[in-house]
Every structure is written in C-alpha cells, then in structure tokens.
Image (cartoon, rainbow, N blue to C red):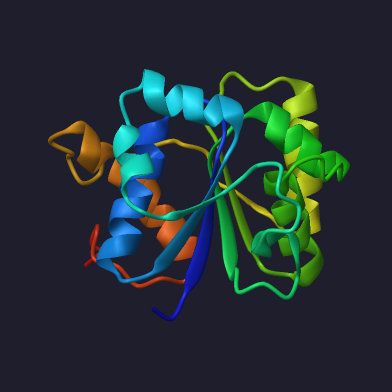
Length: 183
C-alpha cells in the first residue's frame, strides 16, 4: 500500500459516505485508519453502518494524543473528515487541538498535507461560513456533501459515490467510480 489516508468520522448524519469512501479506498489498496468521535460512533450505530467498525481497520482513540496522526512525522498523507459536524469545523478553525481528530487536522494544515472536510449539516449560518472560510484560507478543502445527478444514479450508493469521486479527485487518487466529464 502506497498511500495512507486517515478518515475522521464525527456525529453529523451521513455515515454512508464514510462507508463508501472506505470501500473504494480498500478496492484501490489504500491504507485507511480511522478517528471516530463519540458522537460519530453513536451515529454509525443509529444509521446501521456498523460495517465501518467491522473492517479490522486501525481505529485511533479520540483522546490518544500520542497516536501517529497527532504528529507531523506520521505516515498520514491526507485526512478526510467525513461527515464533519460544524462543532468539529469550529474547533479546527479555532486551533483548539482538543482531541486527536482536531489535532490531526491541525497537523495537516501546518505540514501542508491534504485536509478534506465534508460538512453534512445544513443550512449554514454565518458562524459556519466564517469557520469554513478560515479553514479554506488555511489550506483545507471544503467539499459539501452535495451529490450530483449527471450520471443518473440508480440507487443511494451510486448517488453517494458522486461525492466520493470528488473526494478522491481532491486527493489525487485515480479511480473509475465515475467517468470524467466529457468522456
């Protein structure tokens, strides 16, 4: 495995997005490690996405500030927070580093590694937008969980995969989930 992606999962609805990203990264033979907030675990269970927890992936404790992703010398190449709550976005924008996920995001920003944050909440208020603006100005990519319909998706997985394809594009990972526009 050549790439190492850390996936952060928070308490926002949308665990199916995390499941599909893990699925596609595994198909591409890319190493995936997880950081899951307490509310993220609750949502995974509530949305019946326990498959995420059954893949035998490394799951770092949210409180373990000695885990690899807490350091700029770790093998983490990119961090994707999917789905991201506005609370997590606010903590990252404020630089609190109050848990491993927020610290890993801070590491990505300071080390100029890829940080892709996928907010799933809506509507946005001005505080949300200002926090996202701060993160974009700091080098993060904000990619809303806004699926598209150009490919005429036939089921929920195909619809979700339109967002996953955009995430992989941002991470410069070649995939065949969807044809490129015009192909």
